[in-house]
Image (tube, rainbow over all chains, first blue to last red; front, side, top):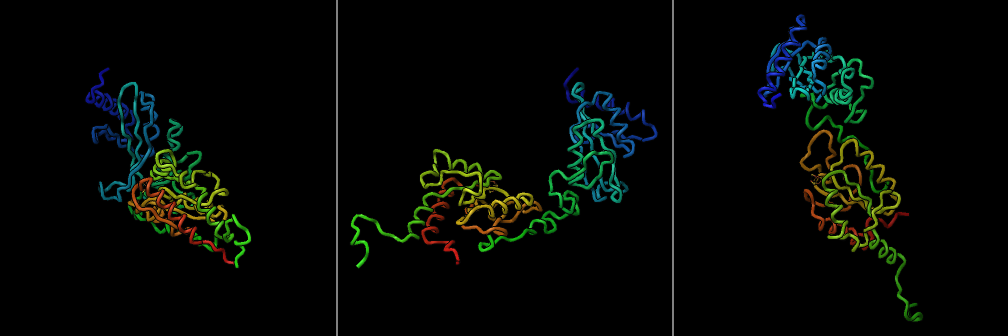
Length: 176
Length: 159
Ligand code: SF4
């Protein structure tokens, strides 16, 4: 097997197309972004498609994350896009699976049934974007304090926060 | 006619001055190193800069045994309650050094997670500028605290 990047991309693309064709009703869109093969899938087909990829040799879940477009990026699409980056060590290939998620119901199925590695990634994704992963056994915040009332990587959240950093009791010299 | 003349060979002082002298030469630091500044603090403590020369070599990892809190590094909103608890656990008399730009004012991290200066929520005696400050600056800050102790600041506990 050659380790040429072009050959690796071709392998990934071939698998993406093959898996995509198996889910005709999902109308999977295979594309490329930044040199990585992408599959844009409907969110309720994400887990079956990820499972098919896993069977096809994508044994490593690199990351689960999301991005917030504020609906500016691709008009007509939803506000959030959840990403699963999967890698096949045996094939030296990588596929980026993406699913659009609407703002008023930001939820997808958990991928932790396929890869345990998804557990923390999904918690982080929930913590930062407020996307809920159905079936996740322990969907709590992972980085921010538990009582933090916002999802800070949403683009409508101000960089300086909403006063969380100023909200502590003041200890003065005579009180201590 | 002072008592001194009756007791030749004894050094006379007030208890207060004796205490200050003892205190300033045996500061026990509580290191609160949360980021890169802590590396410079470690350097200041080790052989090249040798904070032991100023009586501050006994690093205490228990706040209950220490009297100078060195806040070296970024304090996040998750860490601030911890820092406050540690400050409250330190027995009097106590002093606080805010080491580096981040601890003193948030540094370049003007973001939602970062406390914009620990002095907003706990009292600070000496600030050290720099990102990171050199170990000499920490030594200087310690000497500054020693001067404060000599002058009886900030304790002179109200009755
Ligand atoms: S002041 Fe600079 S060296 Fe110190 S903690 Fe902040 S970024 Fe790190």
